[in-house]
Image 1 (spheres, rainbow, N blue to C red):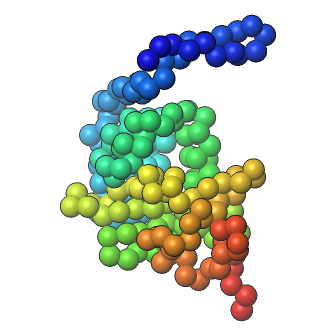
Image 2 (cartoon, one colour):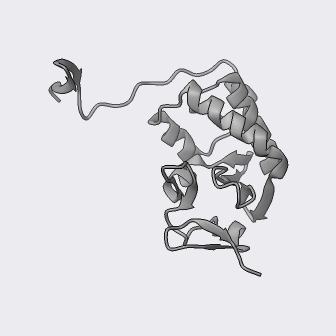
Length: 175
């Protein structure tokens, strides 16, 4: 593909090659410390350490294969990690674990609309974070409040106590 000049405003430009692969991300020397875990809660605790250490290696054993492929193409910044770490540390005492066979969800009280759920899958190695499914199924509005893009998915078993409006936002069921 030929480079294309894109306007950056005020006469600035940048050359971009379309149709090329993303940058090969380096392996973190600590990657071997972050593998699948015996429980979803232990996997989330390992992920907290990943965030604390600022590890952006997409190939951690803590992630499903699909998540590793997803993170190969996704830019993870230290600011994103710091924000997620802060949010998780603030809410980790309020987690609810719901599990069905080889799937699990860790979620937070519905009033905490900015605390999105975490999806997990159990493989032969143990429990792994499934950010690939999360990115396909969960979206965020302008206030960073999460909603389901599609309610009909494998992880909705963990939300049977909630109702969802026409836009996919969760609400407590009226008693």
